[in-house]
Length: 108
Image (tube, rainbow, N blue to C red):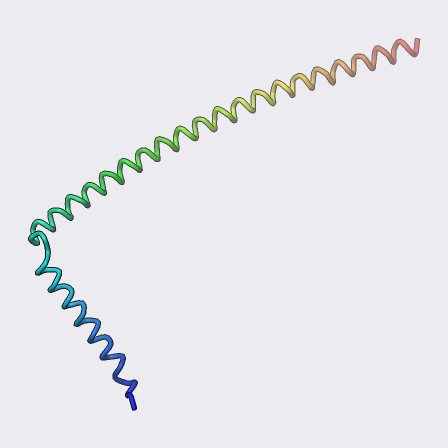
């Protein structure tokens, strides 16, 4: 019969042993020295950071452009509504005047 109490500990031990074996093999078969690899990784990290800054700046610029465009659309919409409101007010006033003129003509 198999003893389940020791299977967890042996699984962890096998996992650690596999990780150690992988690290040793990676070191032996690495195409570059440790210093070269660190320099390469550092260069790539700096490039990535620079690219990230560029993307962030571009996103901020685009965001500002979108906000400006949206403000323009809102302003044009507000102007259009004001013009229509003024026309409607003028039409209502003309209707009132016509009503009063007709009412005054009819009562004479």
